Structures are given as structure tokens and as C-alpha cells.
Length: 339
Image 1 (spheres, rainbow, N blue to C red):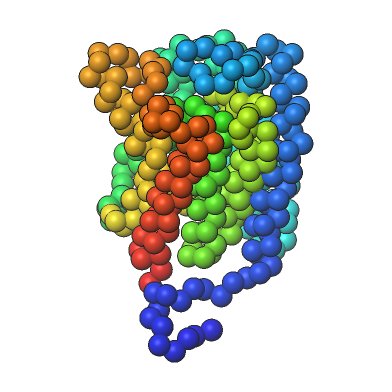
Image 2 (cartoon, rainbow, N blue to C red):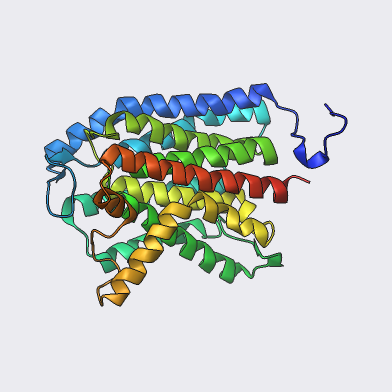
């Protein structure tokens, strides 16, 4: 439908409510699965002795089970498999195409790596190697998830693969490092995933991608039922690794950030808060002569706590900052992706 007097850039494409319902279904299914599976992950963590005990760097005051990230991963993966036949019947395309299978395969590896770290404290260098290996799965020819264009220039396959691995490992660690308060990483990831849904549905019409992003958002929202302050469970490195990896992989899959030089900023704005926090953590540790993976209490959430805010106020503040970055990303994506 055309509206006289409005410029084309303000018009939106016709909404296919049947496909939109499919996206909503993915969100709901993932949310319900996360609600059901998180208590299972909690019991599993307790039996395996994977507990987060209070210490100097932690702000919680009682032992809390980890491995909640296993429930997030399972909710996402199961939702993708559940939604695949519905997507095929409606759209005629296979949701479980090689690139999506590559993301799932890499997610299995990186989630397992995080789970092992939660249990055995994997050395930082070995963990980094594992992250690189998981990210490298994406760029294998059989899966083909890699950047193909950057700043309006075609990338050599090897360069595109290297940039993809670098991006995925970087984002994985940004989410991992910001996971320091109840509900923080899950909330940030959920907001980012919902932003992906909005861009996909309203601007690009890529429903398959929207289903994937909605599944990730739903898994985060369902997990927050148990993880928001006061948290009954933590996602652990299993969860933060999975979320960071999947968000980064989905951003490559969508390919919006390589449409133009300006549009490269879209995922950076969506993830501005964790990227900002991680960048300053690296600079801070280098200036002190510390290893960049050494823990400290200088993260954004620590600083806000030191200002006198309580946990919930800090988390809500960072949610709002994330939402602001995502809003700017939506405006930029609209300007660059919608003629």
C-alpha cells in the first residue's frame, strides 16, 4: 500500500502475517523449552558439582549452579529442528541448510568447551584455541559461513574466512567477559537477537534468518525466568560462549554488515556495550602489565556497582544502553538497506 506524501524510505514492505506468525512461534517455542530445560540443567550441574561459589570477584552470596547455558543451547537447537518442517511447508526453503548446520556444529563445540571450562577451569590459551577451532568450523567449504564483501569490496575467500573467525572469536569473548551480574549477558543477547529479528522481518524479508534469531531471543527470555536477580542459576561459560558465538555467526549469516562500508557499523552498534567493555578491559590490563584474560573488577557493571547502584539498577541501565545502541543500528540499517 502506498501513502501519498511519504518518501519511499519511510514506507515498509507489506507484512506477511503468516510468516510473521512462524517467527512468533519460534520465539514462543524456544522460550517454553528454556523454561522447561533450565531446571534440568540446574540439577545436572548440582550432581556434577559445577557450582559457582562466592569469592572476591563475585557479587553473589551463595553457591549457585552453573551450566544454565546448556539449557539455552538445547532450547535454541531444538527450536530450529522443530521449526524446520513448518518453514519448509510455508516458504519452500530448507531451514537446515549447510550454513545453519555449520552454525549448529560450531555451537556444539563452543558450548562443550564452555561447559568443560565451568567444570575444570580450562587454561586461557587452550580455551582461545578451542574458540578458534569452533569458529573455523563455520568457514569450512561444506558450510560456507564467511564474510564475502567488506566496505564494498569483494573479499578473497581466505581473507573472508580469516575475518569471520576473528569476528566470531572476538564477539564470543565480549559476551563472556560481560557475564558478571544476574541476567546481564542473557538480557543483552536477547535484546541483540530481537534487533536481528526486526531488521530481518521489516527490512530484508529473510524469514529463515528471523526464525533463527527469534529462537535465540526466546531461549534467552526463557532462561531469564531463572537467571534474573536473584539468580537461581548461572549460564556459565557454556552459555556465554554459546551466545557470543551464535550472535556473531548469525550476523555473518545475515550479511547486513557487509552490504556497504557504513552498514558495517550495524552489528557493532548492536553489540556496542560488550564491545566497549571488552576493549577497555584489554587496554586496562595491558597498561597494568596483566594478561588480557586475567580477571579483574574493572568492568562496566563493577564500576556502576561502585557508584552505589544495586544489581537490578545496574542491569537495567546496561539493558537501556544496549537498547539505545540497537535503536541506532535499526536506524542505520533502515537507511542503508531499505531504498
